[in-house]
Image: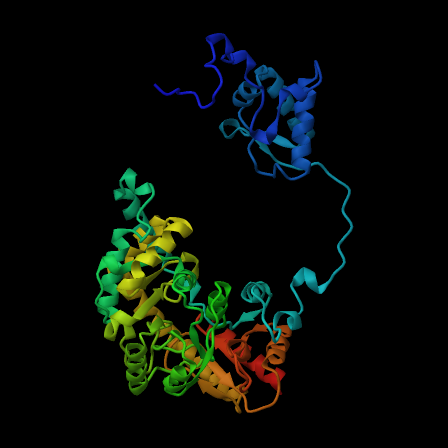
Length: 505
């Protein structure tokens, strides 16, 4: 019979088993150990340690100290030692007894004031010129988000103030009220069955995609889709994925991080130029056909047929980022490419623009030959996305709450879009506007010879944040700005565009 002891030495006799008296006299609280105290000075030692913790911030005002009985047991001292130490803190004015609430820290020891730090631009964020550089780094979006601004017209953010908190909490209570204990364990790396079913129905109703729940993979947003797909494609010998130009800087960064080249293919008023895609010879292409980022054009019917012929003729893969497909105002819906050519299209969607990016929830519907490899990549990345948000989202989808939310935000976004168009007409009369029919942003371009990164930096210096168009281009083009309107009020939009107009003048 194998030994139950996890070592190769002799099995201890009963006399080798430590007795209760040899258990160390220490506490996890502040890592206190009574063995450190001088003989006969336990209360003094404990009071000093507590004062020090309050002074250096380990114990903050409002923190509750452990119950005297609990701390005495952990330190293996008499309860009177702890009571005496607490009493000294109370007499010093650092703590107060609050009855059943226990002993609470109420004030920190007074220390000599530290010299005031020199006032520099770094304390308030980097200077605008350091934010909007011609060659954005890997952390560019972190830097932009951290840069302070009175008005933020950055693209890609929905109306976060209207997040359906009440509906979310109501759905979360229903989920937790019925969730079995086993539902809190490790789950299916593909995602919860409930959300995969809900997504399959959502895609069928809203995007015309026929896919079963077993074809859906739940991921942490489109960003993770690109990372997983890049790993799978590299493992199959693919070294590049062609991208639209202009096209999303963020998407390009993710693909490049995983070792894929991103050759640019021009975009015009009908979308990606498929003839030039053929000339590139890339085995895969990433497109945003429903609402191209950042130009806002829709992939025209003729181009769609050309793109599908390219895929069937070459065996190429189309990565369809269904960016902003839900947010349309002045045009009818367009079908997803996945609905027409499932064997060659890897479809990616998320709730980042519909609910909030912080949910980090999206989905992938891949061709059958890639699905299993993507599931494996997801499994060995994180064992699957967090289940509780998935279950709540499934509840919102299945009850129709998500579609009600979409109808509400469309009205609000349309009003803000209209306000931005009016403001551009008033304050940027020489600008050309693109992408107004759908989405959460406008792109404005200028027939001039300046660097749009300089314009964005100058606007930020006046408290208004926007993206330079050149960040999203691999080839030279007209200067411009990408202006988000969904997360700003009408007043902020009008003021922000007016500031840009003054800077430009």
